[in-house]
Amino acid sequence: MSVAARRRHSLRLLAVTAGMFGFGFALVPLYNMLCDAIGLNGKVEMRAAQAAAMPDLDRTVTVEFLTTVNGGRPWKFHAEQPSIEVHPGQLYTVNFSVTNTEDHAIVAQAVPQVTPWEAAKHLKKTECFCFNNQPFTAGEQKTMPVVFMLDPELPRHVDRVTMLYTFFDVTDVAMKQN
Image (cartoon, rainbow, N blue to C red; front, side):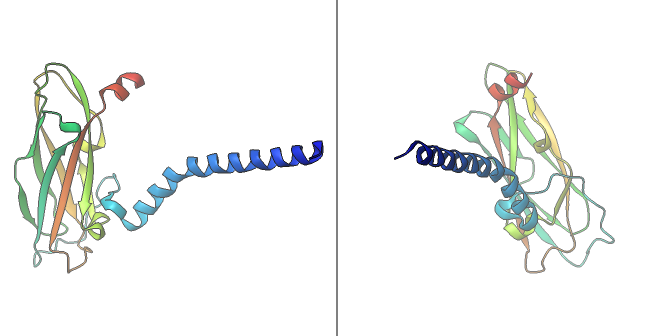
C-alpha cells in the first residue's frame, strides 16, 4: 500500500471516528427532543403549568402516586396519599414525605415517570421536588409538595394516570459540582 493510500485510509478512519463521536454526543439532545414531542417513557416537560381555560368538572381521573428508592438505600419515601381523584384543568397539591435514615448527609434527586405515556404531555407541574437536587442532613425528614394539573385535552379514554418518583443518591456528583 502506498503512502498516499495509507494517508487516505487514515483520513477516512479519522472522519468515521469523528462522525461516531458527534453522533454519540447528539444522542441525548435528540432523545430529549423525541421525549418532549411524544411523551415517550413518561418523560414530562418540567415547566410551569399553564392555566387551562376551564376545569372539566364532568370528568374524573384517578392519579396514583408510587415511590421507589434506587440502589436499595434505606430512605423512607412515600406519598401522603396513595391516589386522588382529579378534574382535568384544576390544580392539586400532593405532599411526599422523605426521611434520610442514614447517619450522614446526602443529596438526592427524584426522577419522575408518568404512565400511560400519552398522559405525560398533559401533566403540568408548577412545583415539584423533582425539579432540583434535595440535600438532607443525617436523619432529616422533609415534606415536599407536588403541585400539578392534568390538561383538559387529556384523551378521554385515559381515566387513570400513575406518577412514579424514583429517588437517586447523587451526593458524589453534587459534591463535585460545588
